[in-house]
Image (cartoon, rainbow, N blue to C red):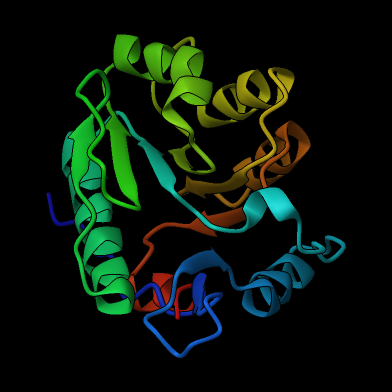
Length: 191
């Protein structure tokens, strides 16, 4: 299987909040780019939210471990370009590091359920989830379960079928990306 992700540019933006010109310290979604894509889907623009600022824990949910690993590696390398240290990638159930940003992946059915149960303790504030995964657990159901717990972090849905966008958005997804998601498309979100 070939997984093609392209670059993550304006999906995350780094800002120096220290005021002294040191390395950027805050990561947040690039709303200008995200809202251009939401407009494509005939959705209202998203306003910046405090809970979307300072991304610390990214959760990637996909039943295909290769896709999850590729996406996590890409996000880690992109964040590394921005903050000079590569964030660790851990499987659900492994201890988080003391790094400023951690990327957590969950691929198995039970891992995904555990991630949903533990999202508060993990401090997850950004989620990437595939749509078609398991018979009783699709991406829109993942989003509904998280939103029902009060989760207000940013959610990216990923699907190969344009007709899944409606279900993703109805569940509370902030932005849906269509497969194949190239790394260049993702790079449009991170800068």
